[in-house]
Length: 308
Length: 110
Image (cartoon, rainbow over all chains, first blue to last red; front, top):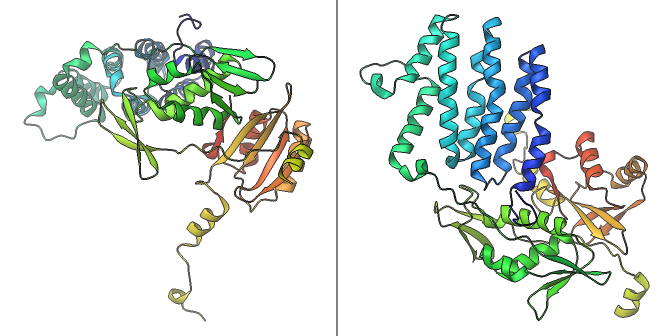
């Protein structure tokens, strides 16, 4: 993916994540002991909900990669049969909260995993193996039995129902939220121009004033929109830095906090801003923009002369 | 001998206290400000007034090898100022020393 061409809000985050979860290190550690693998994999999963992952397809692929250590883990389980399945559901739980759109990829990987489980665990441990097999054939044997359902079964059932009711989710909304990068040019030595400011406001469906307020509050400077509808900010800023701030803006004020869809409307209601999602219909308040404390950086004598 | 039930206990003591010492729901804002040239300034706003900010700034100055002060602001209370971009340093230091929980920290700026 070309960063110069397409500014993808979730791009940078991803890079970070890769460094966070080091596959080689994890695999190396795994040979030593099984529990050490669990830790990095989990931290990776916990990170996810924060991420505004608008790039759904790539994200799914990453998931699969991440799963790999678990497969190896299960092979290890044959050697030490006591530890495993209590840990298994944890990452799944996180994913359920994580994102509904993900479930397509997720369920596929899960099924694969199940099969492995059955193959490998059955010879070891009979009771558990049976349980897993019941999960495999679908809700057929729910009727008539009054046994307790395992977490995995219930999960599977929920996803099955979801896929039944919403076939559009299975076919996959592949719409990625891609926007043009901000064009940031230096003017002289002290000012920076954000050339396509209004264009970006339009793609985000936000009032220029709102974005302007946010940018200036975050950067801790002053600025204004000039005649050519470009934003002039005081101070030196690079495109990368502006992108960072924009990303934060999108995460807070554009993407829906529930379903992460960028199709939202920002309304002002009794002094509070509310984010109304057009896709899932959720409505939640967002933090007001406050510039907070501003230290005096100019010449104090000049300020004193001006006020006195 | 005192009767336990008659002990005066104010159930709202916590609520009143926390709303007093923090302007906005207990968040600690770490900001960066550009000065002339490549110079920058880091401000830390919202630290609880129970702490002695002068001692904190003294420790930070030593740790990060930078200068710093405590500034009194009518609205935001006492604010820490450090020279240079100390955002990462101060975040690590505050969490490590246990003064602030990581989820309370809010880093602003680019």
